[in-house]
Structures are given as structure tokens and as C-alpha cells.
Length: 199
Length: 199
DNA sequence: GAAGTAACCTACTGATAGTAAGGTAAGAGT
DNA sequence: ACTCTTACCTTACTATCAGTAGGTTACTTC
Image (cartoon, rainbow over all chains, first blue to last red; front, side, top):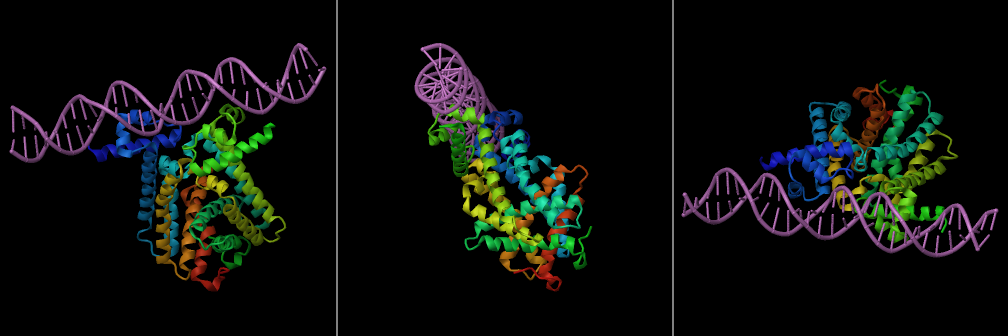
């Protein structure tokens, strides 16, 4: 079997197995056996266990990007681009659960049980946000408040990454940028005259 | 030394060491040595390596929540709550880099090098978003566009978590909720008459 | 001072990441 | 036909590390 094809096969098995059993709980022997090949082959192609995981993540992320790229070609307005891109994203995760699992729970490195527990710990931040929003904002459906709380957590996490990369950035600046994006949407719940969300 | 104090000490060392060297690259012997205690003690208190990691993550997340909770008490308007909370979040990550590293790169399970590479792969999504925004939206500073792209990635990832939890949810609904929050902020770049962001 | 308990240890086992050394087979040049 | 190279593949090992068995010390309680 030619190299490219074998590599492909190994990566596919790796994506599935890491997603299913977790990175730590998966042994190279397991993967080798599933592929129907011996362990040193894996090491020849991917150098290390981490290397194989990286290849698996890269594959998953490439697939995701291609899906969204395909979706937005042809869109004309900014709003349409955003809308189509989002839709493609959420469809991708529903259809390619193994790839998604690898990207999402970069925790699935830990195994399903621990991942769940970590997610539960994390949930406290979302719950707290939901509580605050319910107290200080009205006019949105319960479910949408929850979704917004979740979005806020994600926005903060990635904004923090941006902040890390920018020497001159301050907590104040990061806060301002985040407010600029998020606040308009939330405020529109309360002030529908300013342009209600497209419910 | 009483149990509570030892536990505390072990968790502190674990947070630092996992954040610094990565979960996989850190051995229980390493941690035991740093604490100045034998390995079976770690197992007695935390049951497994995963258990210790979980305790470390829990500790980090609790610290984060307490910081934000403290920040928002006393705020009166919804906007103020959001603003103070965000500020506390970004300050926390600047001040408690070890805890932050554990929460952020749940990848630091992999070790610093691989984490960086994963982040680079991930960056492609953000770059793509930046490109699209620059093409379809105008009126915002370059830097703010980048920040918005980052926020969009984070928002999608967490919104996907919400979607996973809700049986009845569809890609279309997830898209709508995300649009409702995000779009107002972005649109305000182009239509400053509708209420410009607080630059 | 006996009996219990809680913190702690040394010394092991089993599994697994990673490697060394080599085998087989197919095509290329002579 | 016959070597040479290249690429795919193997068996059989080592070193390391998660997790454990069983024992020691020291302090409290009766």
C-alpha cells in the first residue's frame, strides 16, 4: 500500500480512536492493531504519539475549514457570509462527531469520563453568566439567555488568546473590544426599538 | 502535616507543573518529589493522575469564578455587570498565568511545544474569519477586526457545546442565536448612525 | 501502656511509549 | 539474470511511569 494511502488510513483510525477512548487511554498498539499494521510503522510516519495526535487534529481542522469555506463562497453581504459560515460550522459538528470531539474537547485527551467532569466544572461559569443576565436583562427567551451565556464564555476564552498575543493590550482594551461586539446584541433584547434580533 | 494543608500544597504544585510541562510529560514521581513527599501519598489523596489534574483544574476554575463574582457585586446596570465581569476575567488571566494555562490550553496536557502547534493550526480559522470581515465589513480598526474574529471562533465553539446539550436544537437555531448576539456589534461598524460602539 | 489512627515510606508490578535490527519485495540499471 | 536501491513492514527488545502492597512511625485516646 502506498505511503499516502496508509497515512490517510492511520489518521482516520487515530481520529476515531482518540475521540472515542481519549488520548491517554489509547495506546499506539491499539491503533496499530486497528489499522492492521505494526507499531514501528506509526512511528516512521508520525514520529511520536503526539505527532499522530497532531496529524489527527490537523486533519479535523482542515476538514472544518474546508466545509466553512465552501459554504461562504457566493455570499454577497457581510451578514450572509456570517450566517452561512455559522450554519456550515454547526452542520459540520453534527455530521462529523469524531472530528468535532477532537477539536472541541481538546480534553478528550483525558477520556470520556474526565471530559464530562471537566465540562461540568466549567459549566459553573456559564451558570453564573446566565444568572446575571436573567437578573439584569429581560426580554429574551430563557433558552436564548443560556445560549448567550455560553457564547460569552467562548468569546472571553478566545479574546484572552488574542490578548496574550498582543503585548500592548490591557485588560481594559480587551474588555472594550469584547463589549463592542457582544453588548449590542444583548442590549437589543431590552431596547427592541433599536432593531430587534431576527427571531 | 495535616491533610488539608498537604492537599493544598499538592494541588498548587500540580497546577504549576502541569501548566509548565504539560500533563503527559509530567510524572507523578516529579510532582511527589517537588512536594517533598512519596508517590503513594498523591494516590491516597487524589486516587489517580487524572484525579489530581481534575483537582488542579477545579482549583483554577474556582479561583476564576471567585474573581469575577467579587468584581460584579455592587454593579447596578446590565452593562456594568458585563463590563466589570469581563475586566476581572482578563485581569485574572494576566495575574494567574499558571491557572489560566490549565483552563485555556486544556491542551497543555500535551506539553508546550505541541500546544503551540495546535494553536497555530487553530489560527487558520481565525485568519479566515479576519479575511472575510475585512472584505465584507469596513469601518473598524484592523486590530478590532482581529479581535472580533477571535471572538467569533470562541462563540462558535461554546455555542456548539450548547447545541450538543439540546436535543431539539438544529444548526439553523444555533446559527440564529449566534447571529442575534454577534451581528449587532459587527453591523454597528458599518452603520454608525445606529449607535456606534464605545471606542 | 495498649490500642487505634493518620501521615508517611520502600519496594515492587504491569503496561506502554519508543527503538534496534533486520526481512521482503519491486523496480532500475547493467 | 543479477545486483542495488528504495520503501514497506516485522519481531523483539528497553526504559519509564502509573498504580499498589505492605510496613513504619508518631501522635492521640482510653
